[in-house]
Image 1 (cartoon, rainbow, N blue to C red):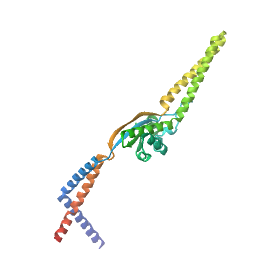
Image 2: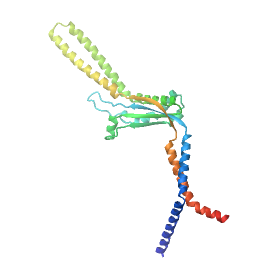
Image 3: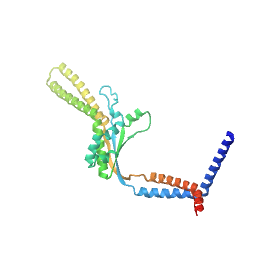
Length: 277
């Protein structure tokens, strides 16, 4: 008895599916019309989308090295997500909005960050090899977008430059101290008459010159490699708040669904109307 009942259900399902398919095939033009009308509506809606400006600034995060041994240090700037944390902080939003003449609420939801990576190797290697992050701001005018993006980029650089700035200041003091000792030894060497004393002064002078040269090389590294910097300043580009392609695709899909339901229910609705009439 159960087997017969299951067979009847399967037969009914096959009949229903066949009926649905026949209705779709018979009125295929409804699906096509729905697809076309939906795509047209989506395109017209996208034309009326609000015009906005996007501005992107690229930040170089730098790479911190220890003074002794040159070991790479894993600080906050070694993690690109740090940029997003700083850029979305309320203090950063308030500062950038004030410089751009915007309300913080208008900027708060219109900031995005993206890591620019080579895509090769492990994630840690990608960060150290190509520590670049793009900060993008969307605003109602060109000026506001550019100023806000550049302001956020500068905030990020300032927050992440603490170690490099201290290292640069220390190396500059070291170079100055070496130079003072070099000048003093050179004066003593010129006034000395004993050959042994001159040899001692020359040996000491050589050590100081080597130390100063090393400090100058480390200073160049700290300034040009280790310290974060704004690599490219923002330039605004006009765009629409709504993607035209997405609007057309979504509207066309919805129109296709409407055409599908119209094809399926065309015959039942027409039958009921004929009975009423």
